[in-house]
Length: 199
Image (tube, rainbow, N blue to C red; front, side):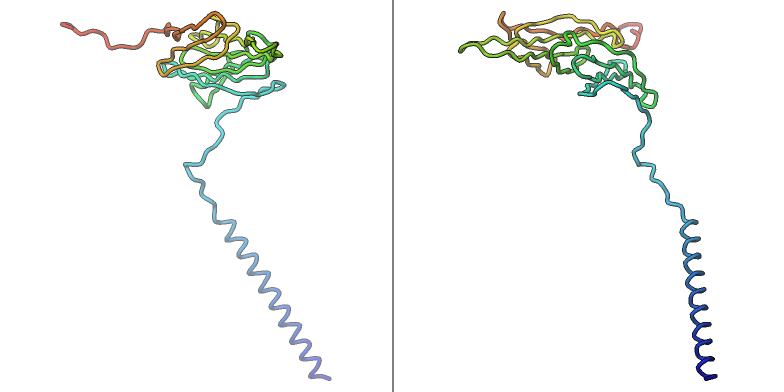
């Protein structure tokens, strides 16, 4: 009986030593894991700015790059909410310049930006009458020379189709014929070197 008691006591001591060893090892592993810091890569993407459009729906956006390396985003909201103009020249300091209305908020619109020109295609679905039908789509051109104050420069009604070529000419086909439109000239003079003597 004494031997049995000694053996149980020895087994209990061994179990206690094994348990203490496991606890000690687990705590040491935890300490060494805490000491190793995960090094973050310099190449990881991270958010540098955020602009909230509280209460406005987001539909699309277009980018404009000006000659003087200024960048503007035109964020399209739903047809009755307009377009937000965002200056992203310094991305970490992005700021809203304003919110402008669609030319005709009663119809759905699509926005494209090319140079100093915004092209807004407005569509209104009409039922077809008989075999011939005329489109009731409009094309509105905005001058973006001053991004904070865009202005409508031309509106075409009954547009069947419009195209733009690599030279930024816009071709508009409507019930009145074919119209060829150039992009508005940049009103800001380009930076050039001063003339030297003898030039």
